[in-house]
Each structure stands twice: as C-alpha cells, then as structure tokens.
Length: 293
Image 1 (cartoon, rainbow, N blue to C red):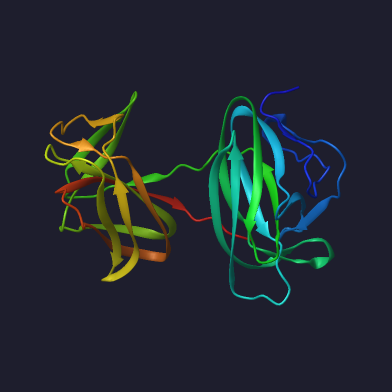
Image 2: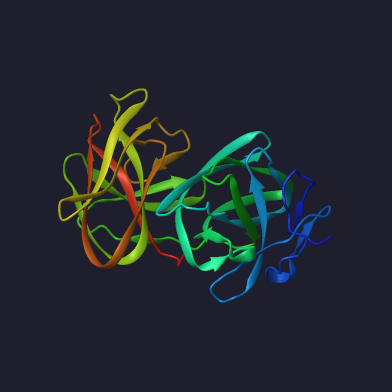
C-alpha cells in the first residue's frame, strides 16, 4: 500500500465506491459497498462525493504526513432561498474541531436528478505521520444532509502585507522567525490593499511586566470609517515565543481575525482598543479569493 492514502471505514452513511484520482498517484479507497453520489460542476465533470447525514458519522483514515482538503456542499433543501448555514465537527482521537459554514445556492453545480446544491465550502486537515482515524459529524443543517469529497492539496500561501510606519517585531518560535508590527493602543494603523482577496490579521497582545493573568482586547478593521470586521479577544501570556528585538515585553497567545475584501484598491485602518496593554504585535496577510461554484 502506498503512502499518503485515505481509507474509509464502514459507517452508517452513503458512500461513493469510486476511486478519486489525486496527485502523485495517491488514491482514495472505500471499504464496503454503498451508493455512488455524483455531483456535476460547471465544467460538467462528475465528481464523487460522500453523504454525511445527521446522526450518521462518516469515518475515514488518512496516512500522513500530508495535507488533506475536504470540500463540503449543502444538499439544498426544497423551497429555501438566500444564504443558509450548516455546521460539522471533525473528530480525531476524541478531540473535536468545530466547523461552521455559510453558503448560497450554486447556479452551476447540481447532484443526481439535478438536485440543487450549495456552493462549496472547504477546510484543511494537516495529517500527521502514520495512519490517522477521523470522524466527520453533521451537527446542524437545514436539510440534514451535506455532501463531501476529499483531495490531497496543500494550502495556498498567505502573502504578508507591509505596514509602513510601524516598528517591526521579530517573533521567534522554535527555529522560525516571523515579522510582526507594533500596533499602539488607540493609534490606528493605515494600510492599502487590493482585492478581491481574503485577509487575516494575526495578533498577539504585548504583555508588560505589570500585567498578569488573562487579558481582553478589541481589534477593529475599518474602511473609510465603516467597520469591516471586529472582534473581542481574550489571551494569556505565551510560553513558547519571544520577540528577538523587544525583550521588555512578552507576546500573548495568538488570535486571528479574518474577512473578505471585494474588487478594487482599498484603504484600511486597524485599531487596538479595550485593553490595559500599550501595544500588540500584528501581522496582516492576504490570499486570492477562490471562485465558489
């Protein structure tokens, strides 16, 4: 048996029995017999999906180390329109990873019998070395059914955005060094960015010697005064990272704010408030948006 393979264990759910071609001769193998679920996408190519039904988990094994991307589609309920939400949980060794998605009706893809589908939403699994068992559970969905397929794909790289006028902080973790920028409390940072793209802001509160225990703060992103994204965070001191060039402060555990930007060149501001800390280390990264079909 070759490495980087994915096996499906018997489970009370509808499974495809067709092997899906993947890169570098890796393959998907399904145990047992079950009904094939075909999804026709915009290029009129049929892809093998597997049903995940409420109270009927989909169990599978993946051999690593590798990256596994899981594509999900809501099996669209009759009479529904607009945007719908659904949630799943990925379980590995009794550790749960909650997954929540919002989707809308696909105009180009459909299931058997031209059944309507939601536009795909996906997530990645970083599969460690060896054979690893997983269980995918549908927690909530309007129609009680979600279709999923698996592909061995590496995540696309996030590209850093330079924050001019801010002091650089060199964050050291293990053998890696990553550039953050010092964002002062109450002094928003300005940056220009072109869309369409997805943006994530990685942030670590800077603990000063007088600060102890868990700390709260608010991170807000605005465009021409209008709030695009914002969130309250709670953090503690990190015991695994330091700033190589700012030993007087201790970075907190990391938190992330994500949002989407539309077409065009935009001027954004990022502000830190609601905290006793005087500053935080931030890193802004962007990635091209994918076309959901």
